[in-house]
Image 1: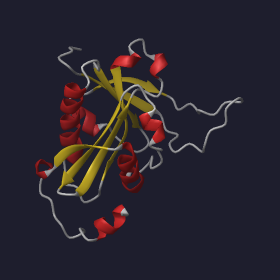
Image 2: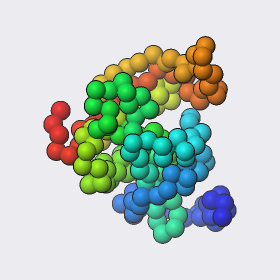
Image 3: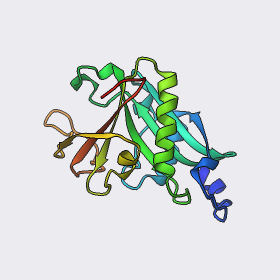
Image 4: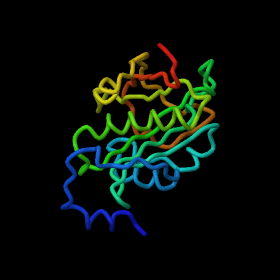
Length: 184
């Protein structure tokens, strides 16, 4: 069943608070499909790029069978560049349906942090990258994450390895949050 058929029947449904949502773990395929509809900047991520990591998990915010937000987590893309890379989970994509209520992003982020802490005892830190061309980092600030690094955009394409056209070319801010009773 195509997701957009379900969405079109729900356009008049008004949700007042993200507290009405239930957070459920969902498949990477489903999360990537929702992401392709909702993500403003990075709609493309193939589910196989999620599941082939050391760790991964995807969540959806639902009312009944209707999803309004997804978070796609995996081991960091550049896991080998961190000394503790096997203990980090990266928020690879976070997409929220336009009809979702205000504060959905920070509310769901907090719920996902708790789910991840319960699911992965070996994960000690969460990271995410903010695209400075389109976001201000508000959800991370509201969720008590810490901005730890700003990097200039560098192309992933090299002389030896051609990549697909890049979806985002702005500078990035890395945000971090310690979990499992870790202290910063």
